[in-house]
Length: 355
Image (tube, rainbow, N blue to C red):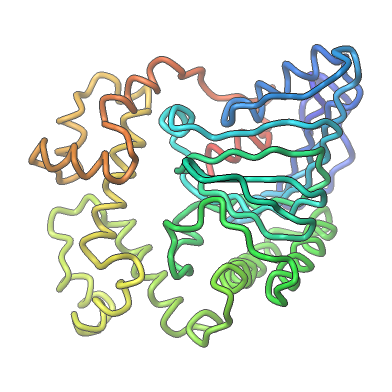
């Protein structure tokens, strides 16, 4: 077994009782066992192809991650070339829905589906959307990464659904500032108490959004429009299954006019579009949930307000580029349960599924 904090199958590192930490270390394992562990971990969410001249050569892979309230922050050292891809089949099976933000120390290439690979220079910010297909060719890594659930970051972005495989130059002052902040945050991770981590959550997400949006806007700093929009999105997320979730009810909840609500939600395609996206994602989560296998697709869809099967199927396919039936089929064929360690401890892979 790889070295995992809290797993008595290997000697764990000394960890302060602060924010949750996970160490996944394959450097001391026999090559065959290390490859199997890597495929069980990262390979549960991505298609991986390792380029190794010597099959018996040790697999130098190690990651240390910290779990903040709204995101995961980790570093990753990989001493071997590999191709990493996220396919439709993968996201149909696991239902992960968020962003991974990468700072690669070595030059590599990345792309979204049906696009040519673009070069990622050392220090550049690479954004990958877990709900879309992507592929990367990595020349060994010593990287910093951040995993953020969509509801935490999307409300702060200008174009939340158009970020997949986007590369932003590391020469951008905002990107450089964000990169420096994450490095400092990761160095301090072992000493952070939960209260401090909570206080750092919002500023970190706002800095990430500023780097991605390529601007510092008043509404993206302390309070006004961007944060208000995020609160509206959270309200919709919390009331998505309410049959009486209407524009006037949402506007009343925030003591604003419907016209202002429409304006604030325009970055998400409008109020109705955002409600539909939230409900469709809930449907997709239910379709891949083993506990819901006894329910028909129509029953699940109707439970989230989709009473017309044709319109539902069309909207689902438009959003996920797959039919509801295909998503359920992939999930049924590929479900292998949770990956976890003994005594209830959590690994980075468990966190990614739960965050």
